[in-house]
Length: 107
Image (cartoon, rainbow, N blue to C red; front, side, top):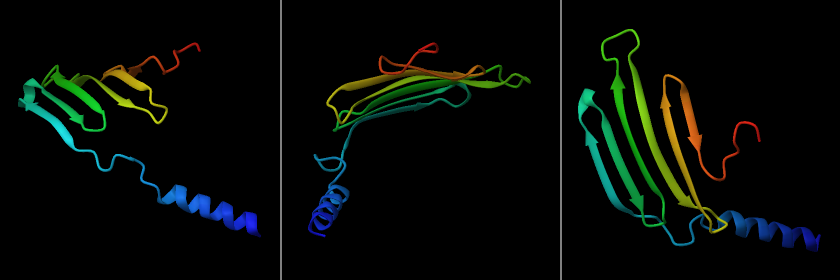
């Protein structure tokens, strides 16, 4: 019974611990450029090291093949202290992401 109580206390402490030990992250950079049908772009950086950038443009406007083409990237520091970076594209061929930690197609 004593070990169960200790285990329950450890679980309770883990659940109650904040996910971000530095407290709430603050937005330190925000840029947005929405130029309507000509496209959009944005960039965000937070105080906890998260960065993201994306841009998109509508292609084949007004046609049967109208589609949004997007490309971007984001990065963050994982719980292991390592920086993870992902680049991606999305469009008529679907979503494709790449990063050093993401397995390739045949792996």
